Every structure is written in C-alpha cells, then in structure tokens.
Length: 77
Image 1 (spheres, rainbow, N blue to C red):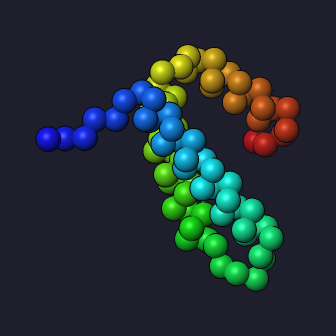
Image 2 (cartoon, rainbow, N blue to C red):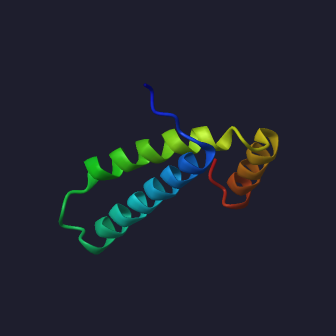
C-alpha cells in the first residue's frame, strides 16, 4: 500500500525541511571552518521539493509577480 501525503502532512514536511535548512545555514555561519556544503545542498533540495508541492495550492501569478518585485527592489538581476 502506497503512503499518502495529506495536505497537512505536506505542509508540516515543508516546515520541517525549512527548519533543517535554517539550522545548517546557521551552523555554516557560526562555524566557518567546518565544511557544510553537502548538508546545505541536501536541505536546499528538500526544501525545493516540498515547496514545489505546497506552492501549487496558491496563485502562481501572484507569487511570480511578488518575486519579480523583490528582484527589482533588491536589484538582484
């Protein structure tokens, strides 16, 4: 029997992965002499996976416009 991810479980999984990414980024900042690259890459991949799933529930046009606004505001292009 296949495991089914409910909407709530998917959201909680995203939150868990965001926290794990935040943790490893802080470790990287606080311990600059230790190598964290692989862990950071792993957590980025996990966050992107779950965020992609959760994002589908929301208005893509609004999200894209918001991102575009931030790119302009912070001159990231």
